[in-house]
Length: 105
Image 1 (cartoon, rainbow, N blue to C red):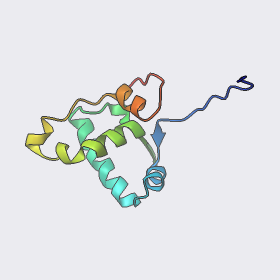
Image 2 (tube, helix red, strand yellow):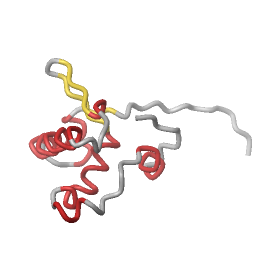
Image 3 (cartoon, rainbow, N blue to C red):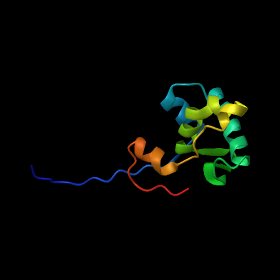
């Protein structure tokens, strides 16, 4: 087989509330609820400050943070189970999603 063309794909790790709701087939209210909870986790230092970017009425959420949060949400909400949640690892999560570039957060 001969390769005739190389195509590079570009994507942003940040998505809006609307994009996440559409992609996950859930309502925006559910995404906003999780966004509020993610902000609490940012204050608890689980996620970096850059996980949620707000500029005026625009809000962008790091998709890797969102996926990590919904994966461990049940455990993070319970005091005793919270201790068993692994630390956030953006590179491992990106790799599991098929994003093979190194991710720096």
